[in-house]
Image 1 (cartoon, helix red, strand yellow):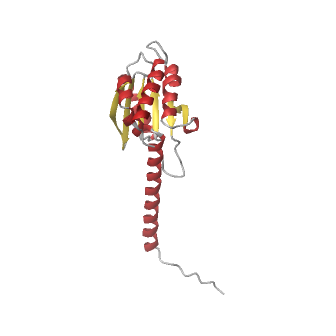
Image 2: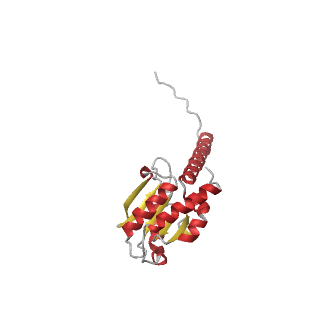
Image 3: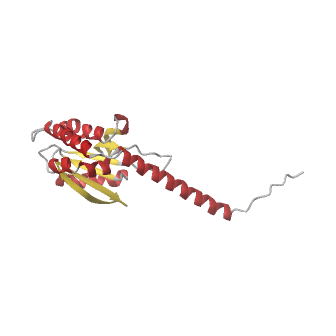
Length: 188
């Protein structure tokens, strides 16, 4: 659903309330529960859409959003790494990069509740797409929403599924051309 001007204004006040729930002396758990979980909800996700404290590389990834599917080659869509407000997130980019490479996730969000960095995984090359402060996020919520929303995730996975089905069909056609029909004769 497109975000209208009044919805953006409403999200601005919602985001301000979310951000006021933490202080510079808050801990990582506060940021997870008071900032990240409410953000996931306003992005359209339910609790069933994510796992928290997922063990990756002998460490715990804070949030894995969009479940990987082994039946289809579908990576996690979004991973989120959270730091305490007193931590500079630039010092933790290496950690989320490792998590993104290991999980194959498409998008990563690194935050301390004050700063937000969105990263993209292209062939295990992790690049920063955009960085937001709280104020910038409030003013540019539309772009944040378009990148991270559940609707974007669903569109991405739907397109991925359709492309995989097309590739499988093309592969089947190639195989069919190579395999001669076998006439099975039953011996008397």
